[in-house]
Amino acid sequence: MEAIITLLGQFVEFLISSFGYSGVFFAMAIESACIPLPSEIILPFTGYMVFTGHFGFWQATIAATLGNLFGGLVAYYAGVWGGRPFLHRYGRYFLIKERELAWTERLFERHGEITVFVGRMLPIVRTFISLPAGIARMNPFKMAAYTAFGALLWCAFLIFLGQKLGENWDSLKPYFHRADVVIGGALVLGVLYVVWKRRQR
Image 1 (tube, helix red, strand yellow):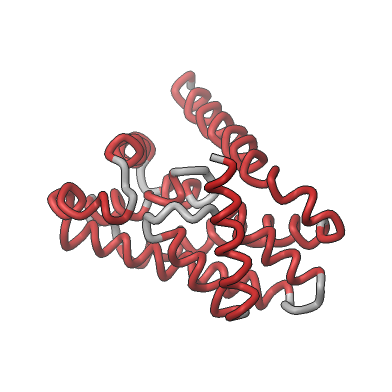
Image 2 (cartoon, helix red, strand yellow; image 1 turned 135 degrees about the horizontal axis):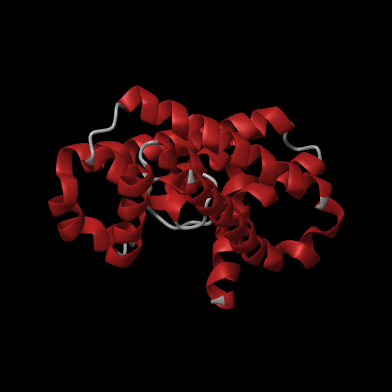
């Protein structure tokens, strides 16, 4: 796993260093279109580029958010037009695992459209959430708004984190993926707590 993360990190660094804001957009579009290229590698490195003066904070955040939105819409319309038969036939080419997709679908069915917003800030879920939204024929404008807002918060947070930790980038880089799991777990617990309190009422 560490070797895979290292290779992904090298690919992301090459992409962003070579193509600038377009590289940020493209990397986040990949991450949002059901291809697991971790945003916890993409965004902190983007923040590091802000730290070094190569990027502006808001320009980078907007590029990342638009990339997330574009990739999310691609996945959404794949769900609208192809549905589950498309996934069964071609999902393996996009590294989509049935178990992870089924888990994401259950979250969407259980908690409704707000899952698209919250899911943009959760590990695994944010990569696949647009597909069940498309299969369920969620309103595309609402889906786009939830995606953009959730992605904006997530992108701004991780870019800011990478910017502030810029001086120690090389030593801290291996820990970003693990930190993402902790943050995502905390958010999941928070959502479950809110749902539990509502049911108690």
